[in-house]
Image (cartoon, rainbow, N blue to C red; front, side, top):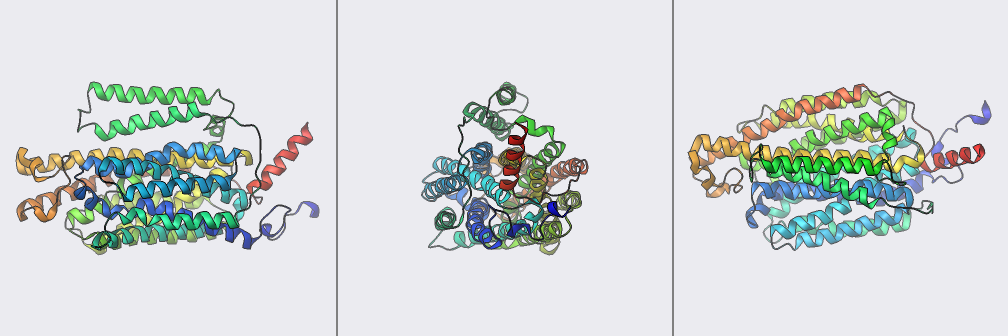
Amino acid sequence: MTATAQPADPLKVGAGRMSHREVLQALSGLMVGMFVAILASTVVANALPRIIADLNGSQTVYTWIVTSELLAMTATVPLWGKMADLYSKKLLIQLSLGLFVVGSLIAGLSPNVEILLVSRVVQGIGAGGMTALAMIVMAAMIPPRELGRYAGVFGAVFGVGTIAGPLIGGVLVDTSWLGWRWCFLIGVPFSIISIILLQRTLHLPVVRRKVRIDWLGALLISSGVSTLLIWSSLAGHKFAWASGWTALMVVGGLVLLGLAVWVESRVAEPIIPLEIFRSRTVSLTTVASVLVGVALFGGTVFLSQYFQTSLGKSPTVAGLMSLPMILGLLVSSTVAGQLITKYGRWKLYLVAGAAVMTAGMLLLSTIDADTGVPLLSVYMAVLGVGVGMLMQNLVLAAQNDVPAHELGAATSVLTFFRSMGGAVGVSALGAVLANRVTSLMTEQLGPAAGATGGGTAEVPDLSALPAPILAIVQEAYATATSELFLIGAPIAFLALVAVLFIKEKPLHTLSGDERAEKEAAAMTAMH
């Protein structure tokens, strides 16, 4: 018995294992990279109304500035995850950060919304690599049993990045000699610092073998998801929901995704290995990740617009108003990570997180143009606490359930489906918001509503509206935003149902690389 007992501190032993200090040094570069990826999506939140006004964009463009980055991230995450199982993880992370720098520079210099949308796609590809690879590298270095304490640190970075993002964005927009373009340019120095830190501190073995990347599968997945997202964004605005265009795009998107499944089931090196879904834990965490993405991104992306349009706050104040949700997320993510490492139990936090997230959605569905800031803060904190317990631990549960050689694929599959849920949520709920605002304003103002700048035509410039019309616009945006959370609540509840059926398994005490070596040795012994 003594020969097989686990050592007291598994991070400090083992032939190929990095020490606690080396892990922290390597994580420093990863954390700066993650900070940049988070900043890309949050720093722009409070700047969007100003960007749309400056570049003469519509409500649909408002949605797509967020969606285009999420879509590019979603489409490329499985590809990054697959390449991480085949090539140097270190090189891939640096490549993803390089792409992010290029996208940020183009975005900061964009003369129109078309160029801005292209730059957001490039940013999304880079952010997709960083998001997927950071978790994959962590799993390669650190055993799941010990991952909690490091995941807590990442939760803190996530919290700081998300807190800092809207605040930085708001301050930059409100500072006359800087402006919204610096919301994109500010990520460049952080990306370069991350590349340098990773070059100096990250040391992982590279497994070289003959590989084939499933480009056809990647193309079909990207095309299918993109088609459905474009449909959900345009339906009800450019054409009717029940129309020939709807039938064409929905059927086309589903056919492309069906072909993708067929291709993935036959190629030697699939982007998304279908066999990993034989694991009940992976299947259920995937379903939960999609639902979390839809509920979370779909609801919260439009909160900043509610703060500025319905409550009349400045971009900086709107950034400060997002603090309660982020602090809730930060605290619950960090505390849950520490408790999981201490006791080795994790399902409790998934169930509690999904339940609290659903409650937060229901509370936010009661907001209107007169909701007080203290009450709004409590509602947002509840949502943040739920998300903090749920999001990171879904990945942990899946990583713990698959063989080491599928760690990259499992991690990227979860990230892919969460991002896809987010992109679908932002796109579909953005279309719902635009249509609802238009109908509410038409009820109040008649067919002339479009001329006020409301609805799907133009996002309104509040300073140019007379007081009676301003009140109608503010109430319309508040009502429409609260309805988005009412739609999000049952979606969050379905995530709760999914995690209830996950079976809890003890966490591994070996890192991904050590498990891979052990599995390879077992295979050799069998032959």
